[in-house]
Length: 94
Picture 1: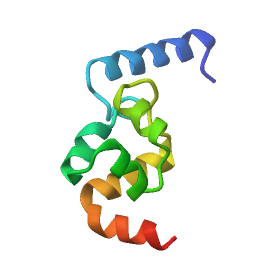
Picture 2: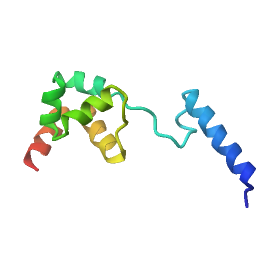
Picture 3: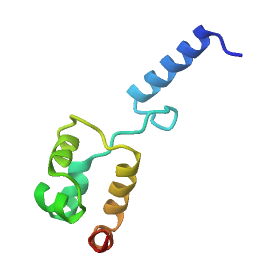
């Protein structure tokens, strides 16, 4: 069983790895560049939000780093990044 010190040391190691860009070692998800994904779609923030049924304020918060997408949003954004037109069509059907 790990001591409290060992747990704190492991957490510190993870934080240092994350700060050094070693997201693979860290348990913290790497930041996602929502603005870059949106720009590749050729859409404005408003168009992007409407196309993928996202709140406009949420898109703005993500792009201005006031918040980060949660796990389900990260999956959606990854899909949009890979296949924006297909995902837009699927979302519009929902």
